Length: 113
Length: 121
Image (cartoon, rainbow over all chains, first blue to last red; front, side, top):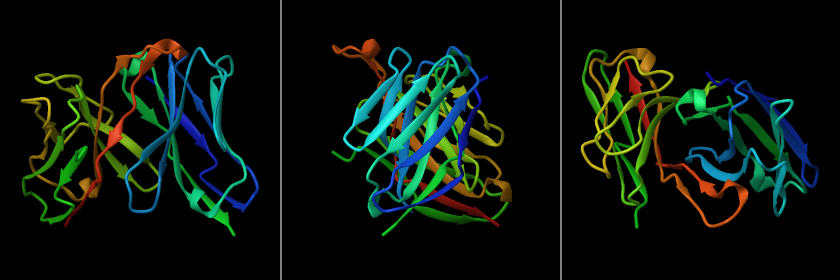
């Protein structure tokens, strides 16, 4: 079945810097890759997603890139702000997992003012 | 519109007791899911249901059961709780469907409930 690895597990940046979180997946048939943000004590919420026919997608300060050949995808946050501090989860959906999402273990991002 | 709700918010339970976590959504989503979240392990799927009347096992189904009698409700039952089931439980729902846009024209956003913090002693 699908396996998703996420790195780093923790990331600390200065406000205004960029942050990059990387994930790799194992199932070459996976076709959907969402990213969720979870603030402390809150529920996970979708922030951006990408499908396998697209190489990059942007939404204001957030972008996701996908390399199908290498089976990895990354979240890029530019001009980070303290409110970006949270745990970020990547996920992948592949046919081998009956269409369900398999999540990475998460990255705790801290943005220091 | 409430979206997706869970009850209780938190619970302390003695080992061996039976417990049902409730999940209700009012978005008429076909698919519903139960995850457990443990520090350092991310979100792991326990059980899922693609539509009312059907259920399936996820990554970590042992010790848990679910039912899906209707579209709105998806309860999770621990028949005999054990300390290793101490966790935060999230219910989620989604409505996979085709869109009119490009990008494969498909959306499958999962919406999460607020979670239930369960402690088994």
